[in-house]
Length: 74
Image 1 (cartoon, rainbow, N blue to C red):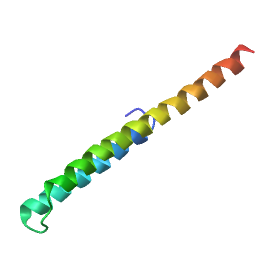
Image 2 (spheres, rainbow, N blue to C red; image 1 turned 135 degrees about the horizontal axis):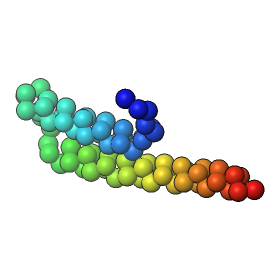
Image 3 (spheres, helix red, strand yellow; image 1 turned 180 degrees about the vertical axis):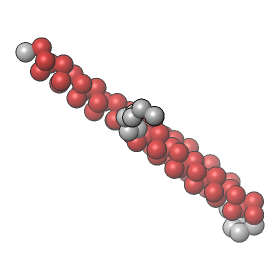
Image 4 (cartoon, rainbow, N blue to C red; image 1 turned 90 degrees about the horizontal axis):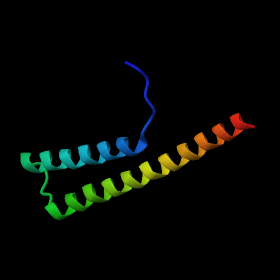
């Protein structure tokens, strides 16, 4: 398998959605009594946070790539 670049936004989204799924499973099994209005905003907020992290990661990598191309031009 080829190496790929680390994408923290996708990691964060996966962790948040996994946590929401585990909470729903615990609720379905009767281990906890979790109202839906706690899990849905947590999942939505996690996805928004993951999108922001992805945008910041993209901006940093684009800036770094531009700096490298400028140094090669000189």
